Amino acid sequence: MNKLRRLALALLLTCGGSAHAEPPLDHVRMQLRWTHQFQFAGYYAAVQQGYYREAGLDVELIPGNNVAPAITRVLKGEADFGVTNAGLAQAYIEGKPVVALAAILQSSPSVWITTGNLTRPADLMGKRLMALPPPENAELLAVFLYEGIPLDQLDLQMTSYRIDDLLEGKADAFNGYISNEPDLLRARGIRYNVISPRQYGVDFYSEVLFTSQEQIRQHPERVRAFRAATLKGWQYALDHQDEIVKLIHDKYAPDLSVEHLRYEAQEISKLVLPTLVPLGHMNPGRWQHIADTYLKLGMVKRSIPLDGMLYDPEPPRTDPRPLYYTLAGISVLLLAAAALAMTYHRLYRQLQRTTAEREAALREVRRLAHFDPLTHLPNRLLLDELMLQAIATARRQRQQVAVCFIDLDGFKPINDALGHAAGDHVLREIASRLRQSLRNSDVVARWGGDEFVAVLPDTSELAAIECMAQVRQRLAQALRLAGHEYHVNASVGIAMYPAHSESRTELLELADQAMYCAKTQGKGRTCVAARPGAA
Image (tube, rainbow, N blue to C red):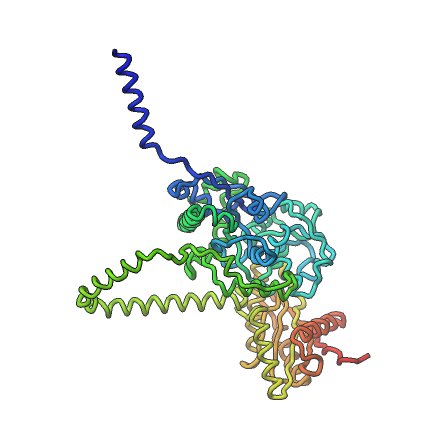
């Protein structure tokens, strides 16, 4: 009898325990696009803080490899979610059923890392370039197309994820992150060059969390929960950087020093822009601009609306109950009208402040998209717009426009001898001198590296030559660096609208060619493009 009682009690306890057991977690595979770094800090934080578990998810983080990019793995069902860059738009236009859930980085950290004398895109023609495959490397390839360099003149190789392959001569350029490889190379005392897409007018989203359309159809709640937990993890990581740095070092990337991870955290935080835009924010207009850029550059055959690519975490509801709730709420609001009237003025002032703050944030985002962050001069994107405006005005008013391509002479030895910090100081000073040397109606933009472009509306060829002589004289004035005087000069090429061409692109190309002519004639001089049909 006692045995039967003990057996019954055991069964009762077993049943009671089962009734209160937690439901099994939903296993989810998250494909990273690179080896473990701070650039994935939000995912590590969401795991460590239990945000995924609270959402009912057991998340497996899969580091990137050189076998298949994240988009391929997600669409094959080998992963449920992935991280990629703005090349996701290219994949969508090509018919791949992908959906962007959130853009973690508002600007891409992707850069070309080189050594030696390879300092501009033209230097990489015919060279061995290690990078992720398209569309993962879209912004890096866009640089060459902006420079008029056909992609078939590049020797593109799948990345090994090892910067040492660049140092060992196995590659001439390496697809790196401004937040990663530069610090590793500096720590080893190795000189390097950075070719950044942003210097050439290419500024795209990056670290885009995405999934497949099939995943959203079959598991909408899982997608919503994963996205929310991920953004929560990113917020925690940004607010507790030292803690997450230690976590990454201890658990995910013990080969990376704490100092390097801190550097990466600082650089990544700058690209997230957490104080300017909501975490994960995606602007449909900016995505469409990215798609249109791919079309202009020949990277896609057509441009289509991207509405189907952008995830809406709160899709429209057809349930009629919200209407009933609204009507009931209106009744309550009518009864509370007197109380609301008392607080109206305070709320209105708060709304004004909030609106002003949002408008200021949007202005800052636009500034970052159109101006070079180092010199604060217009970048290529804005230069394109300003040149088109200048040409349109000149066409209407039958005026001339001078396009001047300015390349610094003597900058590289200073940069090599004193380091990038001194080089940045020189570029800022040169930008200031250029602005002071030109009229308010003139435009001066940073083209990339140590190259600048000046656009002089309503200016004759002779006046442009005289203006550039004054500019070169101003630039040649001594620079004081580290207690010594240094000198730079400039080689300048000029092309005239409409005498040389009426095309913005051709004017830039002709001015660039004329600048190289000035270089070959001894530097520190100005050359004018040859007239069409001249021998």
